[in-house]
Amino acid sequence: MIAGFPGETQRDFKDTFDFLNQLDVSYLHVFTYSERQNTHAISLPNKLSRDEKNRRSKILHELSGKKRNHFYRENKGNTAEVLFEKTESSGKIFGFTENYIRVETDFNKELIGKIRKVRLKETGEKGFYLVDLLE
Image (cartoon, rainbow, N blue to C red; front, side, top):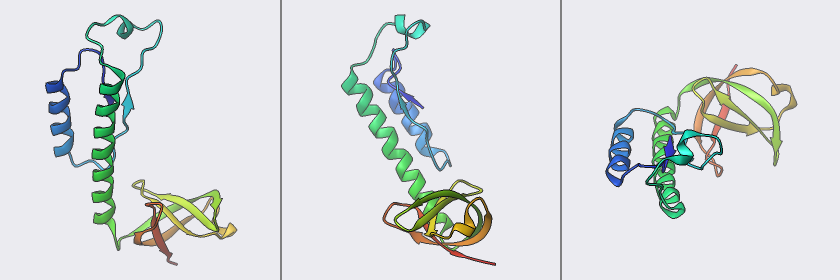
């Protein structure tokens, strides 16, 4: 989603927000519009102020967070397959389920690059799911 494209009225933004709010999606990829040289959009009239573009972007980011949290709550207790990454931080290893839920568990170098079945327990401090390894 691009927030604050030239010519986007308050009504346009409200209609977009209402439409997105009704969709059964788990995440919105939100960008604040910024001008780029050598594009047609740079010459369009009715540009929005930086503050207004940022306000709209913030509203869409909040909606995305609400949808993500709802999606995560719906998946609590489910089993899923996770591809664990090389990333380690504070004794934790991270990965993603097949439906893109971010998870964490205690670091174990044997998990790096492996797909493992897990049970989604609850979200931790960072908002990632804490998991139990299965199998």
